[in-house]
Structures are given as C-alpha cells and as structure tokens.
Length: 277
Ligand SMILES: [Cu+2]
Image (cartoon, rainbow, N blue to C red; front, side, top):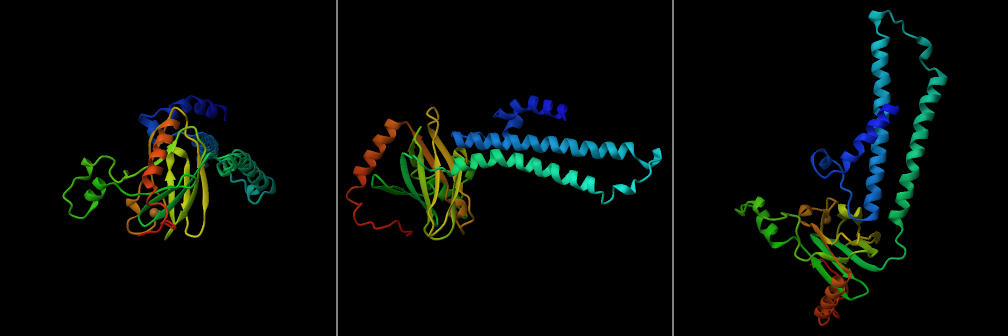
C-alpha cells in the first residue's frame, strides 16, 4: 500500500508535463475551476491505481500461494461468510464517501454563478452559435470559418490538412476579457446542443426552452484563443459548429465591445429575438 503511494508520488509530476506520456492526460486548462477539475481527476485516478494494485496484488498472491500443487485445500467456510461480506461492502462504501466529499465541493463551485461581472447569452442552433452581450446590446452569429467550410464539402478537392484549424475555426469568435467572472446563459433555438470549451472546464447543454447557467474566469496571464465544439449530437452538421473564444486583456475587450456596439447600433432595434435562419 505504502509502496503504491510512493510510486504515485514519484509519477505525479510527470503527469503535469505537456509532452510524451503527459499528452495522454487531461490538460489543466486556464481557469481556477478547470484546474480543480484536473486535480480531482488526478486524485481519483491515484485512488483507482492504489485499489487496482491492492486488489490484483492480493489476487495474484492468493493464486500463487494457495495453488493445488502445493497441497492447498478449499476453505468452504469462506462462502457466504458474514464477516467477509460486511468487510468488502463497508470498505468500498467508505472509499466512495471519501471521494464524494472533494467532488461535491468542486461541483458546488462550478454551479456558483453569483457575483458575475459580464453576462452573455449563448444560443446554439443548426448550425452555429449566437452570442448576445445582454448589457451592451451586442449580438452576433458565430459560424464555421469559410476555409473549413469549403474544404469539408464533398469533392471539394481541398486537402483538409492544408486548412489551419480545420473544423475548429469560426468566422467570429466569442470575445471575453481575462480575470473577469463571465456568466453564460445557455439555450438552444431548435434542438439540444452543448457548449464545450475544455480549457475553461465548461460543458453545458443548450436546450430549447431552458436556460442553463455556466461561468468561467480566465487567468490574467492567459489571454489567447481557446477552442471547443458542440458536444451534443445535434443533427447533420453537428461536427461543423466549432467554438472559438478570444480572451483579451480588459482594455482590449472594452475597446472591442465599444466598437461592436457602435457598429451594431443602426441594425439593433428591429431584431426581437435571435432566430435560426
Ligand atoms: Cu450542436
């Protein structure tokens, strides 16, 4: 048991590396929540490793030590033995309860959408996303970019490998500031979609008639482009509605939002609600 834990401790830093075997692991993401989800994943992973080593260890040891050729005689009192039954029920229950505590703590944090600084309504539709900055009157659609769209067509003659970020690029990304608690109100316009950006630790269903909440707060030193996809099989073009989030500094974001708001002013009043067209 202690040997397994020592091995776990020795191997743990390797899992953080972004190359070699580390690439097989989850990424840590760029938000506090995504890191907590990662830590939770690692904790449960090592609990599973220890359980695996202990169970297989006992099993292999018993098979080798009590084999027939060494004159072992089956112990029939072990069958339906109450003591044994109680022990191997109580121990797993205790392990499960112990794992549920940190998991519940993280879940509560994920669901806590209080004290948000910016609210954006996200509407999934066949096939793309609509982003609506509720407090600023800015609203626009985000579709698969032209290069990917041209290459994906049947007999297009374009090699997808030549298209940068093939099927993972959009015409207009969602723009958000760093170090800001952004609340997303996620809904669907036609069928169920799911807004998923792994680096933020956010994956939430976009269901027609429901408004789901999610939030993220990107680290101050991690502006950049983050990509995701629709994570709910939503029909023919499910694979062609990627998500790109452009995380900018607070000043850059404010300038962008102001620009966008003045651009959209004349067209804004007649639009009653985002509609799939
Ligand atoms: Cu979808």
